[in-house]
Length: 436
Image (cartoon, rainbow, N blue to C red; front, side):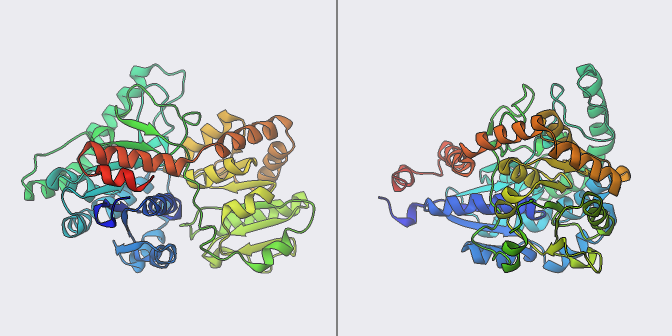
């Protein structure tokens, strides 16, 4: 077995909410077990979690910055949300991200892993020659004229001709997205003596070194017009289990025979008062128990009935197998955990990848969705009765859960990381020997 000194240095950018950070944490853990040096680069809000896992932490933004970012209601607006994140997280953190790579990467020994949020890592790849693997947790990050993702306000229905769908996207990229992104990106690139770029969202934010889709092909098959080196590995189901303590009261609340409904509007949502008020009323209409999940308790209605409980956090892999259904915002991490648990889902999609995930779940036959405008107690209760009372939905849920249980997506993802590293001369034969 080779010595530790031959291991790769891996810089993992874990930016976003818990649904974005958790998969990178799981990937980092498995890579560390294989003997590599792993550094998680993320916001200070997640410092304690990284340290509990036992990985090296580098701060990319203060905890106060994260809390301020999620406090703006524009974050959840169907159209303004993307540009809000793009301005404050993608462009706003670009230079700091680059400097972290320049300071901590060792040429010839380092590989970067990042989502498309980390423009600084993408620029560091071009300037410093550090290989970068772009991780897409959701298929909506890759445009296709074939199986087009649902990206409001674009019309992307399957019956539309491909040229119509593509024309919409190209016009949007040329006259809206590139004019928004390119001036700042290219100004920074010019300072680094790099040539200007364009086609940011259709081409540039996918690394030429490798693109890793962390979802299965039955959820979204590889499309002919996706990046040519795209590899799919399955859902990364890491959720703090064994790292964050499970509340003692949970077991007593789940003791009854009838399983509860679980409600969460997303880990970064702090304007979810209406969502949780609707959840409580829907549970009362159905005469069922409910669990409300959020680390921001100010959103929770006062004087909850005994049949509804609030918990700050419970790993989904602990609570969902004992739940009747999950009602949520449609983030890919939450979606994947419910698929793995084999339970029906009801989604209230708002922005980002959420509308696309809602459409895919309905197509798979495992759930339904309601728009935020239609998300009212009676409608929620009716949809929950529909998805939990359907034998077809139950069968689809069980079939998909069985497929997920047969895959080890994080190990497959690590294999791909090592494959890219080896191709770029970073991963030595000694590193391969260490795994045996």
